[in-house]
Amino acid sequence: MRVGFSRMKLHCFQRTFFHSSPSLTPIQLPAPMETHLWYVKPSEVKSESLLKEYLDILSPCERKNVLQMGGEELRKSALLARALVRTTIARYQINSEINPRSLKFRKNIHGKPEVEWQYSDDWHPPPLHFNISHTSSLVACGVTINSQIGIDVEEKHRSIKHNILSFARRYFSEHEVQFLAAISDPQVQRMEFIKLWTLKEAYVKALGKGFSGAPFKTFTIRSKRVPEEGFSKLEGLSHKASEIVVDSFDNPTVLTSNWRFLLLELANSHYAAICTEKHGSSEVSVLAPLQVQENTVSTGVTIYQMHFDYSRGPRNGASMLSLSSSCVLESNCISRVAAEFS
Image (cartoon, rainbow, N blue to C red):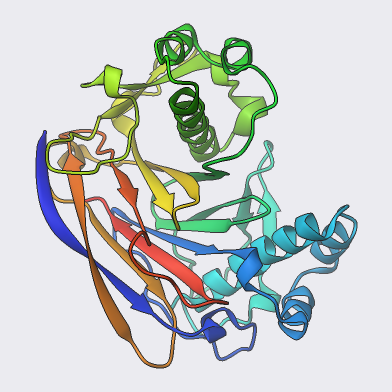
């Protein structure tokens, strides 16, 4: 494992990037081994007319589900989640211009959504995969090509009603409970619990099963090289990122080397875990920097540069990155983080 030092570029644009009109700014599909993460903060979307436009692009079933939700925050978050998925997928240069309203979706037996493409004799859709996660304060959508993906976001400072260890014993593996029990500081213990939860949630979503299909107790997420440091944020060259691995108890064929993880800190307020599938032996033998770009969309492009540390192991590269820590993004905007794993 090696630690390097690089730069992250931030491109800030206006919120018209997330407009529901047919003239969406086109975006190239992710490259192989590349993940696009799009996210929006509901608190920054205040225009009622814009929210109405988002509601208009949903299917009748989606619209009904959104409007039936109790509480304004929940309705807004659910609305933005569905609108973000539709406008994001419609933005990619897949075939010809796609109206976000025309997209159709289906779910697998465990409820994971996927695009239901309309095949034709002269066109076959790309192997695009996406996953969505949202809280009342942040909505995120991850997109890959030829790779299953799972994503989960949680508030860093969310309160947990239950005793951490009691809750962990109920859902986590013995190794994970021992890891949390060894942390004496209650605040650190709570934050490590949240990070661990997001990683586990991202993994089961990448499997396409979710919590019901792959109970958290059936596998362990652990730090391979420096377990005593947990999944803490990288703050300098003296820190090393831990390689994150999966030990599956009920399905040993799900090999650790099949998955890679990324743990992000978004906007100083949320943890986001991404789990993606790996293909081929070439991915596991290359040591390469983790490249991260954060973009918001605007008429004029302002480029900010931030320094960050990265670490990449020979198998499951895992880093904890702090994004947006030294700049303030424009209000009412969408951000995209393109995290390239090679």
